[in-house]
Image (cartoon, rainbow, N blue to C red; front, top):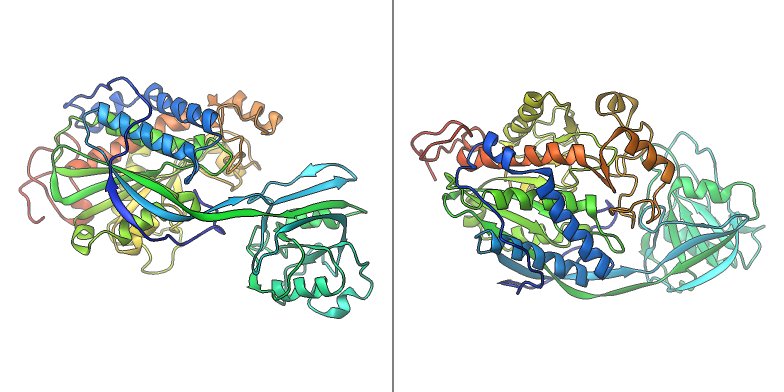
Length: 530
């Protein structure tokens, strides 16, 4: 799942091609009778899903990660293509170009204690025009910061006036707080006062604690500038002196990524059911939960449905460059003719379905929690939500609404009016005490403590995770590295249930009834329309 601050626009070309597999897997078993929720969920096993996750980890071990534009992503595509081919599908691969960026920026505290901050979690580089590339090590000096922050957002004037820097010692790094004037103005004022670098940080009121990307025109900028969370800024502003190293560096070019598709053997093409998950990881990580879990579970469902003769066409999708801003799914919808868009009955999305400190989140298709603006969610999405909620209720498993904001690959679908739904077990958000009472786990800790980090792997502690926290999680859960096996097992069945239900009947969503028997998947009768 992409960071909210890293949305980039997709570039130019597309083609449908077949990529020659580089990995070889054995033939997968499929049964034409896996045609009901009961039968398919029995066939889709945790062991089967974990085999795909093992393959993704092996790929990351060889290539360093599975990020779009890098060799590990190509190997992941090859693995999915080969697995689908071995199962009897004729997969297609859609190629597209995208603006690739490789982040090399760094933020470190050297004294009084050494500490390295994590890019895109604790800090991010600036998006100024121009962006100065360089590094500096010096003492960090707070300039008119207010900690704790005042009650009102945009009230802080840190760095907004040249007079703020009257006592600023030239040759140091300025620590500036978000507030009443633009980031570019603060930065240029600091440079004029002799600062050799700038650390901007968020203001601190609710909704203003995380990361943002400083933008604006900065003529003559000649010092490195980064933006940090409020927590990092408050830490650096505390008792000093603190010596800090700031480095701004990145690589930017255009690279190729791919979407992978596979379609059922049978089904009404005018009433296509789509189910997707993003295949790419972030850079420098295996992406085992984000989104190895969604990709692996969907792949196992596809394998076990390979011989099912469904009433509706089922199209499975594995998206590329989601972590760069939903680029693969955006490209697919942007290049799909309107007539083909009209054939899509609904879209199901699965992004992070095995978070170690999980909750069972169902996209809020009826907007009962009021987090989406009026008209944002297409009609029919509430009925998709109903299928997932019924699954959990029938299993006696708790579930709850999760924000339906367009943050994952369903976003481009709902933007053109296609009903959507799906599952999410949590990312950087923090588990509440009430959720811990329902699901177990650790209240006050992130749903995925390794979200967008190298420790999103099968060896999280060795890759930098908090050993004590993961020991606590493992004491209460069946934890397989950074994956909660209990959550993944249940949610793989939830995915199977929804896909097979709509494969035979979408009438609750769009009124279309397909010919043929529903095999317990739902009600069917004579086709009304296509």
